[in-house]
Length: 355
Image 1 (cartoon, helix red, strand yellow):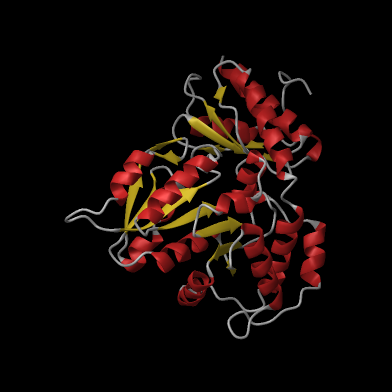
Image 2 (cartoon, helix red, strand yellow):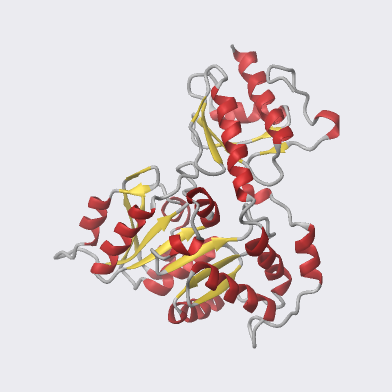
């Protein structure tokens, strides 16, 4: 398809090209097969065997002693903070991180205080982190430092391992725990060409979402020391996160962590191709992505992000406004070469209409 061609919504009866998030991924046939045969138990009583297998295998994958299966990565992050930060301690997080911008549940539940640390591309300023960690008269003590990779709001950027090492060592020197929001940790591992455990080594606890690029229908895993995970397990029950025959969902998670990681490289290539194509359209700017998230600056086009979203939706391309002048597009396993061509045709058509 030529990028300048007129695009008809859902050509030939096809569904829209959905670039809103990698959370729209659907389970694979192997996941459905594993779900149908999964051994089940009551995870709130003596445990669900399939969930236990997922927990032990993911803990090993991340280089941690133990792990806990939970309904969402947001709950995993919350449990990590609740298990490691005391009342009226500081939760330090990069200023645009998902934990700081969109979550902050521990503040409502425990009286912990969230403090943001300015950064660039999701990497917090280490000097500012050092100042926030330094004990001082009349200053609240830091309880936990939160890192994020890949970084959602910074366009899927990946923290350099040396940055993570520096943040981890600075925190541990003053006895402060480090939590890694690794919702898209596997994207970061693939981008860096390292094992996931090489990244999570620079955190005491790490969360991993199973329902984004890994394509499981739900769930996340929190990994860390045996003592921390045991505390998190008790907290999970208080939050209503204990589930009964949860092995039905955990079975899909097992397939996700064992078979769906390497293919994330395809999503990164698709994102790069999308960004390069958008960058050739007059008035649009797309930064070269490190992983599977493409941010598109529409500020020079005369339309704001909401107007672009509406225009693209009419052409069968689904994206998300990410601020007044920016769109976010996320590639995943349901977005191949044909879908990228259709998306680029949609962007071209809208740009030509307003030129």
